[in-house]
Length: 443
Image (tube, helix red, strand yellow):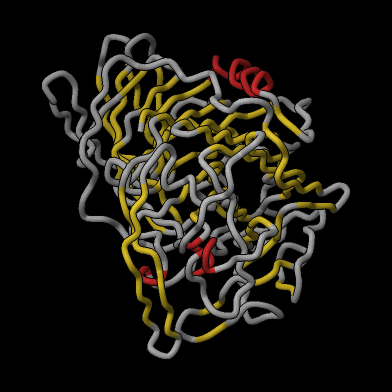
């Protein structure tokens, strides 16, 4: 994830009193076990990288159009992990009889821009705000935004008497400190909707890729990182390190594919999971020359499952870059195949090819994880100030169900097993078990 993003939101309570806390420049409202983003996918375009010139240090691109449910997140996605984290299990499931995987293109890195957020918390609260953080209700009555001190902790109460509290949500992503001067257009809504507790796939979802740390085994996937030039991949002074094979320790590079050991990866170290299918020009478009180029996980219906722990950092000195800020996120796989960290023109990130932060800790030592969608839908995507509790002791099992235009992040019971297939009934049970402590975002 890279970059500083400001997400503007105001909180309006309809039924009960609630509170949000401003801490480290980020707002945290209710603890939840499920967050659902609905209405994901639109018609748009982004710039696909078509050439990278290490001599001149410049990149060329061409516009690429997309549309449909989940777009552009129906394209190939890479799965990214930042320490301190220990990944115990990971899997990808796709519907039975899925159509052939669609062709890919090029992708870019994390960024955050001012975003409009319409958030439904526990299916009773909703808000609509403009790009300046002003609450709009009825005839678009504006409420002035609250000043914020990133170092302060402020509690904002929303009373059942319809008292309004306006706040600016700053999502600090320590990658490229680059802000946007313009915000998205206003999202308007009617009454708060109920979350969609159904899936559209016919039949069971079959395992397409899996990793198990206890047996140090994997299938259908490849572990990479950004240490090119150290055994695999490339390095040059124009673009820096490319993708490389990840060593079994999760920290170093390797000369060939390796399966991750059962290890705790420390702060500011990242590894990435792609499929085990190597790229062709027909499936991936352009990628940086000399890298291990693999396809991402494609399709508008896919499930990612995880078991992980994010222990408090104990090996890296306090104050180090990205200290004690673990995260799990998705990128359009074109991004790391060109340049995840570096010049904006050398990745499709800035033009909106897609990033989805699933479980992200935004400040050092924070115990709460936020979820944010970054593309150009409605301007700059959507976010949610409800949070998952970080698993510092013990493990957390979770699933991310991407089903056409609905993306549901759900914390699972420890007893859930990741078998060869997942039925729709099982998914319904996951949703039902966590609906009482949930949040919904209409994109």
